[in-house]
Length: 139
Length: 432
Image 1 (cartoon, rainbow over the protein chains, first blue to last red):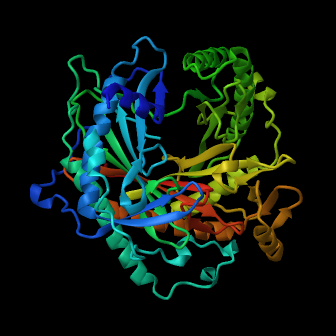
Image 2: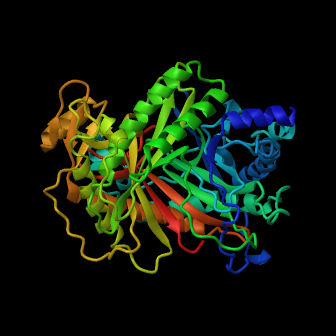
Image 3: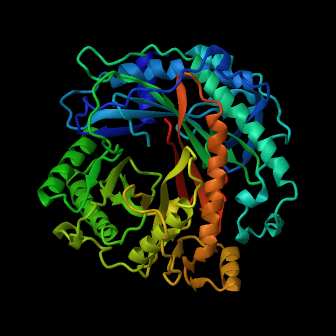
């Protein structure tokens, strides 16, 4: 799949937040939180993660996935979505009075029989937000 | 990319009923008719312990994945001092099934809780005046001039036409102007509400724009575009009924001012009673507004029938003590699709105001509403505190949004994946 076509697909399902304001000078206050050491990093728990899906007919299904596998899938989704979105958002026109500020991409994990993944979509339960705003406002 | 699919979810297992279950009192509403609503679970403490372990597993896996992600775009400020595009936030939704099972929401359904992880950043740029962020395409207030409104509508129409999704520019422009006037007529009333420590600070609508240029306040699955408008209350300003607002059809609607004052009192009473020193605080409360055919405005029963959303937030400079509650002020709920069960329940409990035709109006018990809100605050904080335990060196919990279903009695429960939320409470990590 070409990155650009994927980007278009993602952007079709993205929520776009636009603002005409130019706040390049704004900032978050410097992070003063204590750093978490390697030893304190969260270990992936051994328990199963229940995944809830709702079919078109409204039928609920709860499916279990080992936490380590759930973490691995999230770890694959992050760079894939990032690689698709970044080239697209950088192509926005500077002259546009509604400057693109935030893009939120919904990723759904549609599970088929036997637990295979059969689709992605905006109605999913995880979202990734990208922004060029110092203090992004995430809807 | 293909690798993602190849990885698949081949290791998914057929799942038994081992997912943690919420105590019935957290999600079953009195009018549901379920025997579950008859009483409090005998084993609530056990269920809460199982739920905590379940949430630790979900949040722990999410935090580990975020912490392990090395972004190709990680950067401090660009050469020109501009902030670069980057991955800033991860939002994970949690769902609750009809029988109370809790899990990560994977596909469709209404989230019960949305957990916002945000990356810790330091761009090293000089601080600027704080500014409240907005996701609206158009922001209005009593200070917005007619010329500014006209200019912004022109820009919105141009942007919409540039999307090539709308066929009739003139129709869109006419309908957009009418919709903005209607919205302004609601906003003008927000400005009238007296404030306590929690204030109706913002009004929001997501307009649904059809291909033909038709513009609707109510949700439409066939909408080609959605345009968000927000109305902000200007502190210290007397209500200004601009010519634009005077054209709107809701300027003289019944019940909105009473609703705002009643909700402001109730939310302030509940939120201000939170224990001091807690770093997860209720920041914002939102309800959908519904309008009956007769013009009565009340809380919408479910988001599908909400024509706008009203936000209440804490007024930092107002004293938080001794909010006077006037329970004689009515708080109505407008139900655009009442079931026979709800109508019968309301009749039996004496709070059905109008129930003929295809809609119903109920008068909510405000003491029950305050009790329900207290419960909702506790539930939201429970989820947020589990997430906070999983924070990493790079990612922290920023926000938790809880979606709740309001009972026609005034009671509150967590919304289920097949349900519709009537209210949202946003909790903020004060230590972010």
